[in-house]
Length: 203
Image (spheres, rainbow, N blue to C red):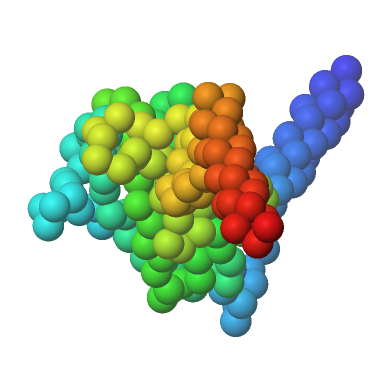
């Protein structure tokens, strides 16, 4: 009986020892890769906004508070080592994608907000789809001499050039025609009377 108990205890001790060694080896296994370094591409946008020669600074959350009906000059400069990238401008309700801006390149456009809003500019790495802002563009427009935004659906009427009106000769009235006819008849009758006098003198 003692021999059986001793054999069972010895088997249990050996089993526990083997299991412990296996678990230790499992948790100590690791993969080591030397010589290769994996990094993600970096892409960022530096924003510069001015109006009337004054720089507009962002708040703590990088939001730019812009006033309605005011012209802002926005310059975006890309940096980083990514091959492709663009910027997304948003006012909280509408977003615009810029053209592709390569690192080291800049683009400038004019922004005229329709209402007071906080604008954000987010750099996106990759290829742009649906770009709507290019360098030199104007987002929003003002009517000439007005602080109101110009409605793009309003058609400005074309004012015709002033031309000189042709001077027409007034037509003769009935009274004038009768006077001229009477003058002609008087001249004819006087001619006839002179002819009769000549005939009488001849006789």
